[in-house]
Length: 173
Image (cartoon, rainbow, N blue to C red; front, side, top):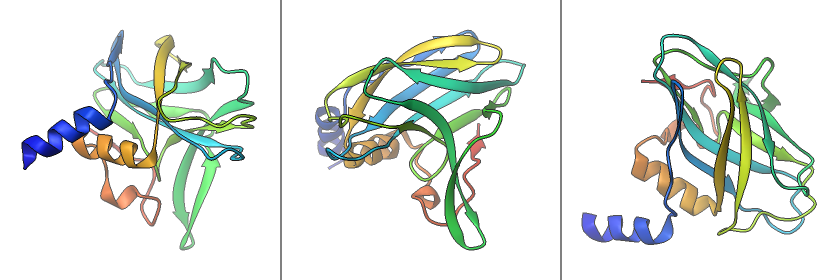
């Protein structure tokens, strides 16, 4: 049964290339597909900082003229209500830790879409870090089901982070 599930994941999920840049390793980059009139889309990835110095993801830009801007966002509970907001000062990537950008937590938010993101496409995004500088990463577009399957397979999905009820500032080793 496990072999069948693994074969299905290989068939459904695209190949991901980990990007190493200095002390940072970026893996599982992906964008969520959107319906035709959706003005926003989420972007996700895992960033591991293998070094001895903290870093901060300060900005992200995408190589697609139909996207207005990319913001760094978080979701968190406030007075019993899940709220999403832009992260002030960037997303911290502490030394020796891994930061997960996933649905329901920290994530990239593509704003002002004038065209949909379609599963099977891919876009280059430039991630700018305070210490490591610019890193260009290709983000494939996946369905929500493919994103969840990929995170489950990687063992990085926090089941409490599906958008309901947990703190969004998750890091771990």
